[in-house]
Length: 108
Length: 114
Image: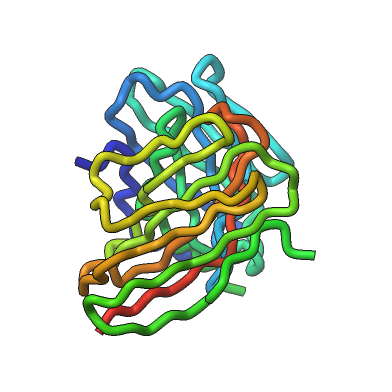
């Protein structure tokens, strides 16, 4: 039973446009959410996080939105750059449960 | 200077063998973890460990055992390897024992069991 789901295995966007990556969760006890970025042959690296008491957190081109009633969070990247092409994982704490990732490809 | 390093990066072995993957972190973190990324790409936590407590994911077979000689190391031992153990294993560490601490991952160790 996967408590964190990323239903889109892949996403392609044009450079300069917005990328929106989605994540759903089922466990209402999760109180902290994180996004990680992973390049091939590397480990995931932390990108941005959000506490469950907030609905938005922004860091430069990256914004994470949390909708607790829908148990849904999303990561917005704007403008998207080719270097953003990677696999993006969402994760939920305290259980440190990860989704299966979404491969983002930003086309030049 | 690598923060979390794992060795070996690639490991190919036969069923039934016993193998180990080593992990070292030079970040001074208190908590270390092992994750398994299976064929469906999910990252599943196997163990978390600090100098006080080992937390084991109940779904992990007891053929898997973590060994921590000191705070900077958490090695993974696997006995009687099975085909289903083939996966990429990631070691990670975090500053605080609390789960909201950012995880720092190693590059992963790809294990292939033939």
